Image 1: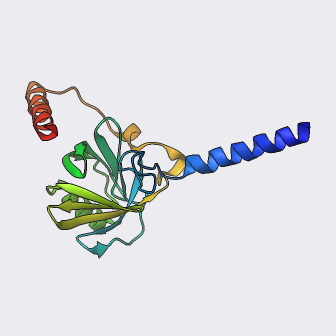
Image 2: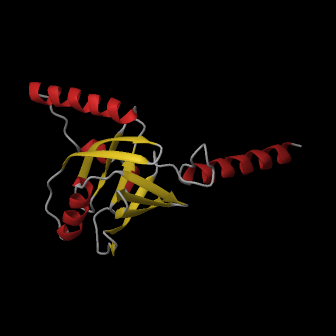
Image 3: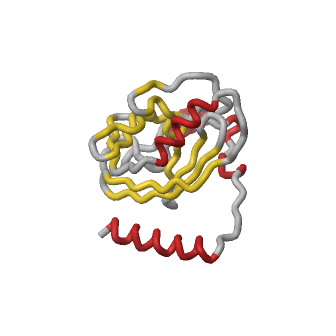
Length: 181
């Protein structure tokens, strides 16, 4: 009896661990990966595949707090976003400034993030970021590419906002509200 109990518990623990390792699924459509809380590994920008050797695999992550962040393969970047249905508005905020061997991918990735991304499409485990109907970037759902599992946000210094930044924040909040309506 005890052996069966431990066997069942071990199986349940295994299933829980395996289930927790997969990317999040959209609650409305369980066959589709969710935009939020999924590590999106960069595959291509403007239709050109990304390749090279990186400190960290280039990725982007959208969190529940309407912030996005990730890594270019060298530097960490961050910004804010709003999403409603398949519409997406991203505001690039900044990035760290290390010098690395492969700066080409970083330049391409950051240039793409700064473009006006208006919507997105998820096809299975692939995220396609679009400007109107033009594909800007393609990413594939994957595991946390950070070595040691630490968040890039731990490396970002946060400064106290100035009065102009506060005003800008209020204007952004108004834009978000207008976007949602």
